[in-house]
Image (tube, rainbow, N blue to C red):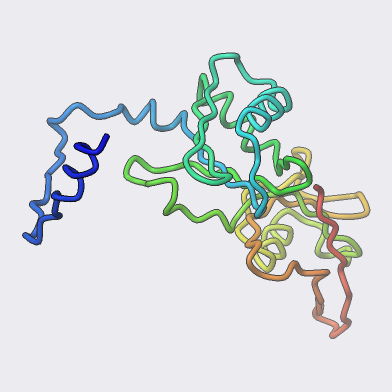
Length: 202
């Protein structure tokens, strides 16, 4: 052991400029199809979470194939490899998810991403916009109002262009680093203002 310690003490780091290693398409790389099966998740909590407990609970909640892998990539940071794209899409669109009351943000990496450098401030959820004036109860207006909350991913209109229910429903990417909106103030052509409360579907 003393010899190993002495050996390490004699090691020095080079001061020379490191050569850039070029990785081109001729090198053996993971296929784009395989990369698409990956997701990276960040659990927004300062508590240390057991990887085994997280893996067991989330795989049960997601009802995924036993071959789905969940591995840690840092404190409360996880790399998930799903069996298929269909399985991954089902999980990502069924959120938001949480573990022990802490929000889990899942995102899809690109081929060149590194888990620690990815942005986990955004997640998608369904939002109900209530008390909308009748003339605004159409699909185009739902998208327009949804953009005032975040990036619109989907509009729930049951195959119709118009709504007849008490609210319109949109799935929006939310920035959790900013305060959530309580509602939207809408002014129609007759100068009448309406307060439209938002209800978040957790």
